[in-house]
Amino acid sequence: MLKWLLSNWQVKLLSLAIAIALWVFVVGQENSEIVLRMPVEITNVPHGMIVVGDQADVVEARVRGPRNLVRIAASQRLIKVVDLRGAKVGEHVFRVETEDLKLPSGVQVMRLSPVTIRVRLVPVAARMLPVRPVLPGEPGDGFRMGEVTIKPDKVRAEGLPDDLAALEKWVWTKPIDIHGIKRSIRVKVPVRLVWARERKVAGRVELKPAEVEVVVPIIPLEDGPPVRRHNDTRDTPVGSGP
Image (tube, rainbow, N blue to C red; front, top):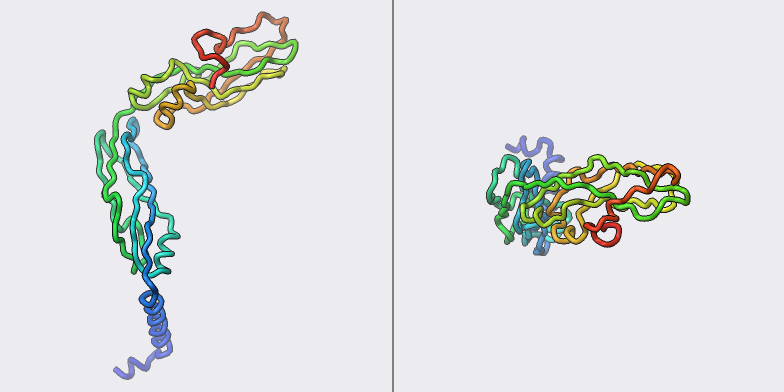
């Protein structure tokens, strides 16, 4: 026994010193208590479904422990991942566990809120909506705009049936300024809902694709009469789009 104690005594003495220092560092500190906020991230939503309802978007955890360890816990990036891979239509309940926080040893969870996260999945509804260009301005002197082409000329709107029913019969492009131009242009621009409806369903309706290619021919006036624009018709709001 004595022989074992004396062998490598330098290493054993150093280990003992480190252990004592660590114990003093942890136990000897004043305890601290804080609230950690852990965002909820929903992943792998099944194709053809959408998450609805007012599910929790953050979990609050009240933790207690030695001040330095609590500071370490507070500096970590915490996320509660809710994986919906393979989930079916309906409501699903996910428990929030203390292990989700990955806290340093010595820090205790005093309270979690909420302790469960409820997620409801419903089938996605869809509508095909024609795309209309928004073209503020006029070409340069001696030029006019030719027949505008859009590819694709329709986009798929996905969302809840009630939201899709509230939409207009078309979507706008982001404005393409043609003021003073004297040559044809080809641009890719985002599409958006008609502004009055966009505010009502913002974030709940997804447009696919999110952008389209617009070709605006600019040709000399002597090549024919001007082409009537979509946003000159009476069934669109006053002005040139959103």
